[in-house]
Amino acid sequence: MCPFQTGKRLLGKSLFSSLLKTPITLLVRTEIYPARDLPSNRPFTFTAHQALHYGPLYRNIHKLHHKYSAPFGLAAEYAHPAETLILAIGTLGGPLGLCYFTGGNFHVVTMYIWVTLRLFQAIDAHSGYDFPWSLQHILPFWSGADHHDFHHMAFTNNYSTSFRWLDYLFGTDDKYRTYKAKVKAAKAGAERVVLEKKLLEETEKEGLFAEKKAEAVSFWGRPKSKQQ
Image 1 (cartoon, helix red, strand yellow):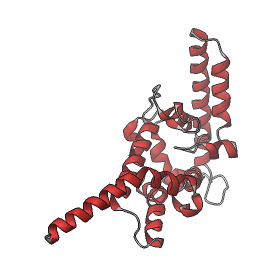
Image 2: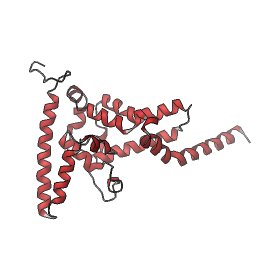
Image 3: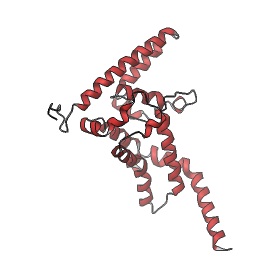
Image 4: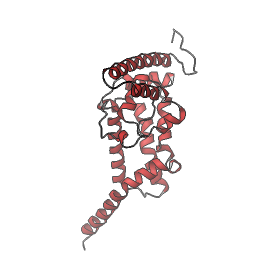
């Protein structure tokens, strides 16, 4: 057998093996066992996102992404280059670390699929569409567009963009859960629509106030002086 055919066969076997193992690899190595993939797991993204809401970091970096209080799909990638680099650590750091410590036991196709899925997830979270078949209706702990839309309005709530158990654990989704409980308790029909609109308007006003308050904080945690 010629070298080309041998190489083709080996590549085919490697590609098939990679594609077969990809769903398990992504789930196990990136989500369930954070100790194996610490830079890439949800705690990193959650913490980094929350840090980007701190005064100087928000004012100089993350504010660009929050230009839209009601985001749309493309707004997922509308961000400062520094923010893109910071959050990319959560997406690429784990797979690259895994590749390094296992001596290259991570197929490049798996990486491409993983990055593509992460991009689709980010676009879905910013799309503004909450379909009956959206993932949050299948996985109750998934964030989704409704959850992240509220973040862009409330500013201080819902820092998770995929799995939202850290928001629940640290109480950073308290306003969102209160809002959902009030809407659910209202009678179906016009009453619920009016109440939901009123609650969202109040949330957006509170979010704008929280944003101005965050922008006024200096690097040392003190309000900026007028001279600054």
